[in-house]
Amino acid sequence: MSDLAANQRSILADLAHQAMLDRGFLADFGVEVLAELNAITGPASAAPDALRDLRDRPWCSIDNDDSRDLDQLTLAEWDADGGTRILVAIADVDALVPAGSAIDTHARHNTTAVYTPGRIFYMLPERLCTDLSSLDEGEDRLALVIDMQLGPDGAVTESSLYRAWVRNQARLAYNAVAAWLDDLGPAPPGMARVPGLDAQLRRQDAAAERLRRHRHAAGALGLESIEPRSVFLGEQLVDLRIEVKNRARELIEDFMIAANEATARFLDANRRASLRRVVREPKRWDRIVELARELGDTLPSTPDARALSAFLDARRAADPLRFPDLSLTVIKLLGAGEYIAIRPDDDTSGHFGLAVRHYTHSTAPNRRYTDLLTQRLVKATLASAPAPYDFETLSRLARHCTEQEDEADRVERRMRKSAAALMLAPHRGERFDAVVTGASPKGTWVRLLQPPAEGLLLDAGPVDVGDRVAVRLVSTDVARGFIDFALLAESREAGRAPAQGARTSKGSSTGR
Image (cartoon, rainbow, N blue to C red; front, side, top):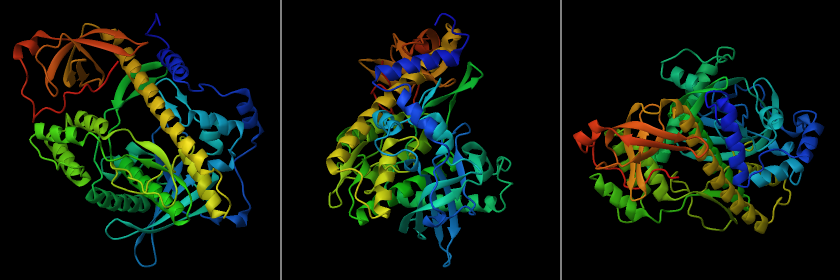
């Protein structure tokens, strides 16, 4: 740690490895896992006549520029009546990772891939999830297809699930697709090689917009958060970049939400137990009401997703700079999501943030164990086979997946802080513009406008959440992810700057 100017990726990778171990994760694959991996000779196969053959369709993947574990492909088609069909193909990971295998046991322990600035800790061995079970461009792959009929109002009117052969015709990236959709950039690389893919993407974008409007009319919450992504040039950390929402990201988000809801309904309709992702009605709704009142708005006294959605939309328009901090506060007050197992006749509160009652996680089996479990439940149903897990086991796995996902979030947050501390280390004593994001007896926190790093404001004085301030970087601790700032005299002399609108929250937005 003495030379922070060299091998910065390695420094963060070593810190992340230790953070994984500290949180009880398996940070490396054992010899039994590697032996199983070496015995896999190629991608999964099946009898040609056992599955539908959809390899000639203009499937594409849209993901991050550097994503290698591709879980889903998307497609939108006109049906015979002029309506829209949406198809989502999910990698058939179960075909290569049988339950109870050494690879499955490792995945079952960690339950999720963990993405840190210096290193990705894949849930499955890298050769598996980035090659053999990844829906790579130009490769024939087995998939589970969610086929949905979209009504004029954006509601999914009917859906079916089946297994199929698919082939990714073009691997595309969010930012390039979004720029093209907004007429701000050229056609994405790869699109021109596939005749008709431009019209196909426009059709997907239009379908996603209809899905989105329908969800928001039902009360889905439009929340944003600031999670800086580390940008490296070789081994050097050169930037912290905010991944902003765009039309391509929203397209995939909308398709995946619809696919997850259709999968949950499929298992219900077939009288099968399932795993659900739920966000219950917020127990701290009274604090959300108080928060709205501080901002000059009124919310009902009982939880109301539509009213909260309208409030958030208004705040985003009125104060976009501080909206991510408001979003973070609301997310915390809503409470964490969790996985639960339910029987067909069980009632569930659904997902408050998405305004849906039937929701599972099924679209990322290379990255999340819950999705692999759901895939096995669906495949057993399609084959009219017994359920692969009894209800007690499914309930136990749901609790474990919830716990491990929370731990993974802690590792990722910790490493984002370490990356920010590493980025700022050479700039001690320098001046930065910042916004106050948290003020409580535990401390006052600020986020720099550039780079978007957050830290503790020492001897804060009379500042409050939402104030724009000038600060000086006092110290950084890369190993612990600590960053300390001091308020500059120009901010003290100006006093509390007038906020654009009322305060967002007095709760700390981060912690040590």
